[in-house]
Image (tube, rainbow, N blue to C red; front, top):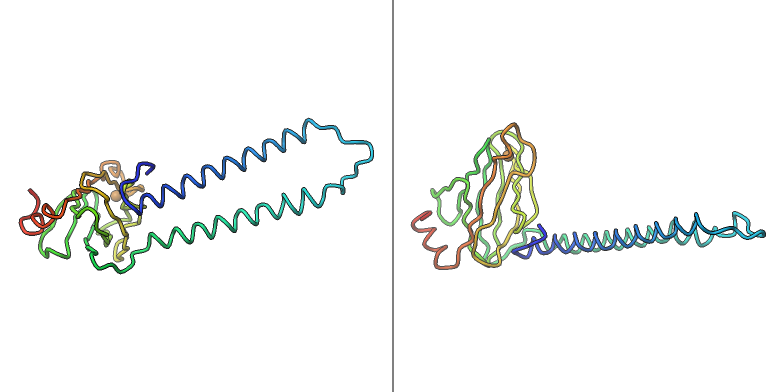
Length: 204
Ligand SMILES: [Cu+2]
């Protein structure tokens, strides 16, 4: 997940790092304030009301409001990038889960199906139409995109893209019965010539 190999996964990794750095900075600030509060001695003329404006209104309410609002806007803007928008070079594939197999179909080659290896072209956006034949599974290729549930009787669409040809590990990312640990698959991203050959001749 932190070693992204495509634009969707890179967006998710970026959000993860921003959250980690921001969360760590805020934790450090809170711990520093806590330490300061425990170490300092109040002056004789100080009243509890004296710090209301700074501690309650500014740091207690203003700071979390501004921080959470900024994170919400940031998350929404980046989340937009992950949506399956129309694209001229879009490729559509089908992914159907069942205990413990993934079956993949290809809109560009009707009748062609593969098991546990999803073939895609590198450098092109791919919409994966995810569904399940039995229980709820979850489709996840950490280096290429986020995860999305595979639901019986329903199709969820996940946009992913591999920047370069290669093999990418995938797995069913939630408990779906004893044996789900073995519910793994591979994504093979092809260059253009190899992708055309795959569509015509099937897997090598
Ligand atoms: Cu599963």
